Length: 166
Image 1 (cartoon, rainbow, N blue to C red):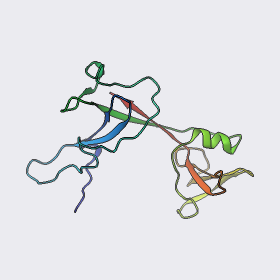
Image 2 (cartoon, helix red, strand yellow):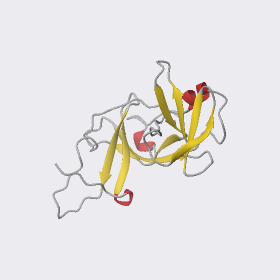
Image 3 (cartoon, rainbow, N blue to C red):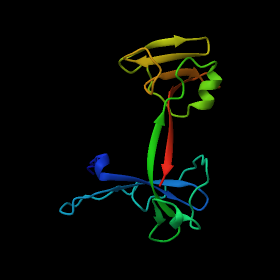
Image 4 (cartoon, helix red, strand yellow):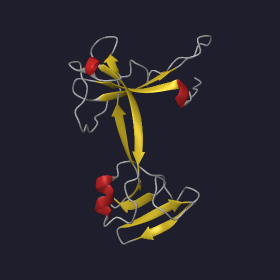
């Protein structure tokens, strides 16, 4: 099978939300009507790959779906389909106090800086090492290397992604 990526200008990212608050990612691309391309089943409206999310202000379900801006019921009427936008924010603008601060606030995996090109050590403690790509500041490219509770290396990106519904 061949797969093709649509640009963000031509693909709407959506979340299909169940009444229990789990979601499945849905891509809604603008397809060329003169081609036989289709959206992959792993990200089309029939996607059943649900996962849990940490909701901060509740979530739209069948009782309030039509009242939520950017949301509508799915064709089968069992779930809520909502447009989403993503906002990425830097978490640390300086050296964290501890590895616990890093692991409690960062949840996005970072690149293995020892295998990647262009990263150098920005800061180091007995608990963690901070790597930066191409400059000497804390930003979204900053990667923290810590040892997890099994003594294995773990890499975290200095970023939190907030997904907004509607």
